[in-house]
Image (tube, rainbow, N blue to C red; front, side):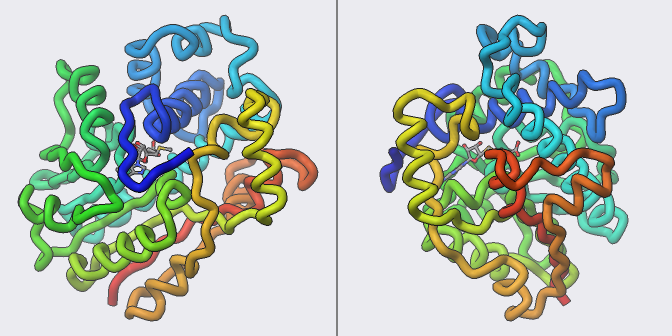
Length: 298
Ligand SMILES: C[S@@+](CC[C@H](N)C(=O)[O-])C[C@H]1O[C@@H](n2cnc3c(N)ncnc32)[C@H](O)[C@@H]1O
């Protein structure tokens, strides 16, 4: 269960979700025709070791990512990575040189995307998550000027970002990938307001968002998680998410002068030749609620 000021490292609570999605990216990269390849995802999994390394060696058949849900989740992460990679490529081509990864987790884009010279990538996350990432990639040279911002995104992160040299008078490109469900509604509104306040004209933002689940269904899933039945029903997430009603991102940014574009996840899966899980499966229930949204400030 969550509390207002809870913290975590890479193997506990919300931090472990960064490892879970990195493991999914590593599994996607093992496919003969991956939608996206993140070579650092495997490095992170092997650095943690145990079940996370076994998973990549085919030696963890009971792992949640090896279930039917897991296969769909890996497809989801493959196309999600592609979506945000493409978004950044376009933002960079449009001249943006300030990148902000909100809840960077084990996102390796500061190491693997071909950034134009002078690009600064700000990575915001909890201190211990950033510590793990820095230690694991100690010998790897980033492809941009990478700056860590160790913060709680429920707090005054804009101030911390400005203190690390973010320039609000220059355009920026932001992402919230795999973050919003872990924030209470008040923190989401503050997050959007912070992005808007710090974004010069011609800035970009992209977020992944999920409609809240029906409260009865949501509680049932939390109960199953408590019983330890997480592999069959949706992975280790339901104890950690807030599931609070929020104004959709396209609407929120649209009302403040941003032009937005919303892609339902099932459409994006289909566009990349990946199956859309059936509505009666757990993965299907999850997939149908998720959208990928990007917006540009006019
Ligand atoms: C599912 S992971 C996503 C990581 C990364 N964006 C990706 O897609 O690979 C969720 C991340 O959100 C971070 N996070 C969630 N709530 C946060 C908060 N209040 N403050 C800082 N980081 C937070 C976690 O530490 C974790 O790294």
